[in-house]
Length: 248
Image (cartoon, rainbow, N blue to C red; front, side, top):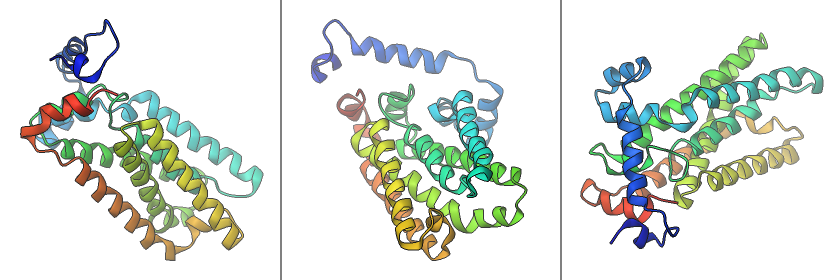
């Protein structure tokens, strides 16, 4: 039985051939300098290729994230409140939500079927996407010329960034929809910001109270545990998982 028949696919569309096309596009392109560096660091050609095919690590995506944070830097003086601590978690959450999953990632099927653990692919991608967004956030803070703001990065908004990214990842993984994952994660972050404003009298309450760091980290840890548990399929059953979960 073909995957199209198993999935009740669109009439006239042979998803098996689509899958072969995905393999061809992913594996036939020669490694570029960035991928060669990743190969040396990760010691895995497959893992390096999965990393460089991450949608939210594409140049256009990174530039878009930088533009959003730059707008926050520009607009903040006009409204008298720093926006980067509020925008950075949201930007990172969106990037994480679109880092890995059916329907958004050309290498998703590859990651589900290659010998490298799918959880390892997910972990490496999440760490790199998070690191890129954290660097963008730090750069945005430095542009404001506030060293105190840079100090606050470590203890304050990196923690909510971790929590929001984890929430987006959990929702995207469980729903198998990057869009749904981002919507859920950003909705939770918006509710948190508004709730903090209602209690503390400021939108920045959620990123200025150090007592919230530990709850944020707890949420992030719980989210990663849920994702790793959900994506725990062993290699022996990976191919069947591709057929049942791979195409959205």
